[in-house]
Image (cartoon, one colour):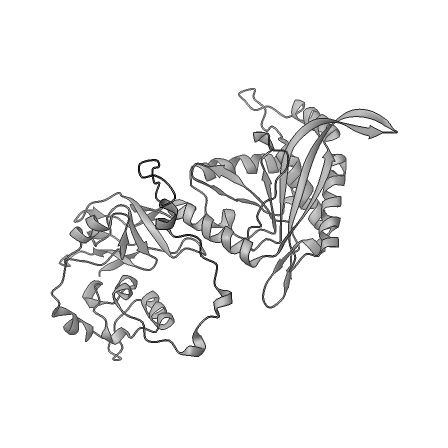
Length: 427
């Protein structure tokens, strides 16, 4: 019995995936569980395995093709079955011209005949995703020619159809749409030809742009800044690292960073000020019981925000080990959706670059994000005498829909107290 190879949804926000590499060739014999191809989303690269044993026939899904989720990209035919030509696959490609040449073209007269393909109940044969998208877009499946196995309509086929005229009442208010920036042509016109090069937007950069614009336009930000004295924290860090247990190779099993203390301090502060450990929704405020803290990790071409779950319950060494693992997998683009989805707040630390203070943009659904700068030695008054201290500026960005000014101030105050007296994190 034949089996469909479908591009799966591996991320909550994923609508398309890019095929990075095929591990098999058209006509190869494959085993169930054998890696067939890798897909790249805006956040990760993942192997997709064969759902069955048999001979694989690959559709129009070349490397670098951008494929809608739910699309059938290949068929696997079992013993005794005759492999058939298969043209399902990508609706768009990173190289449109190459995709157009590779895609088989059907005669114009073939479309009406293919459109009469239906199941036993009289409904047009289509994948569940195609049915859902057609309903959302007001497209009649009866008028479509399917390119999937046995004429089945797949999501890619909807790109060829024209949606039905939408009712006036269904039109979204103009005020609800996001403001558009300058067009590409308008921007290029400001510069001399030949004075620049163009790097195409990949999935990650496009997603970052869309989400941050959406955040700034839909989330009312306000900012609070405090200076934290780090001397005691730095002394405790030095003592703990000196006492870290060693492995068989005589190397320490962990090494605490200042960021590990910051993650722990924010997590405990959220427990002390539960009114700030929230998420805004249209129906109400979600009150979280644990402190899931996201941590911004810079990678080439973008960033990830993996989450330390229930960080308030973990020791500093646990946070350190977990964070190093998450950061390494983020840079290798091997994070799983469970590693970065959700979270109740986040930390963005640019102190290692010498940045002393900045304002971070909230990453929905979080209601807050803490921007941390470098520790700088400066004289501060102690008993009316100047004393040299190491101070760090921390700026809390808050979503005013869920966190009021006084609540944000209480959270930042609790964070500062924990950073300045790290023993309180362990109480």
